[in-house]
Structures are given as C-alpha cells and as structure tokens.
Image 1 (cartoon, rainbow, N blue to C red):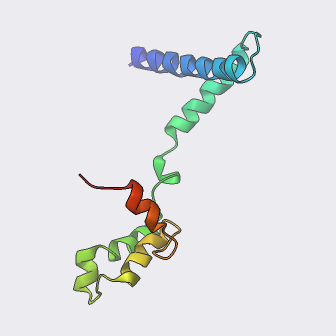
Image 2 (image 1 turned 60 degrees about the vertical axis):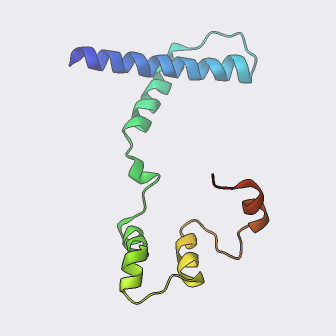
Amino acid sequence: MLFVIIFFLLIVFTLSYFIWWLIYRKAFKSKKKISKILVFIGGIGLIIFFYTPYSNYLHPSYWQFREICKLDPEIYQFNGGKIDEEYYNKLLKYFDTSLDKLDWEYIQENLFFN
C-alpha cells in the first residue's frame, strides 16, 4: 500500500512539474527554474481535481436524469407519446439546441455514415 501511495505521488508531482515546464518554457519562453513550491501546489491541485467526482462536471442532477429517462423512446411511446419533432426538441433541449437551430447543411456535408 505504501508503494502505491509513493508511486501515485511520484506521478502527480512529475505531471505537475511537466505542466509547469510547458507553461514556463513553451508558453512564456522563460529560462527560469521551476519553483518546488509551485510544483507542490500544482500537485495538490491535481490530487484535488483527480478526487473530484465526475458527477460534479458531467452527470445531470437526479431531476434532470429523471426527465431524460422519461424521454427514452420505449418509455415515451409506452406513455402515449409519439416520436416526432416535439420529442427530438425535448431531447436536444439538454444540449441547448433544437431542430430549428441545427445547421443541416453542415451535417449533410460533414457527417456521413459508412
């Protein structure tokens, strides 16, 4: 277990150093040495970011998930709904768009199936 913790910290601080190196050397073209304090703070930040669950970023809330489940085609049809423009607009609402806002020319030109 101790080996895993040490290995994890080694990866985190190496990644932190690499990120600071990219910022210093590539973005700002600086030749300064990277401070150990910055590497430590960056490592702590990476650990906090690593342990933050994805649900805070990507997953919908319970109530949004419940509404999305109601839009499952089988459930939606079972409840008397028909899969029509209204159904697709309800789905696209979760992605902040609608059928009217979609760029159909772009879709036809660039997105094709095998």
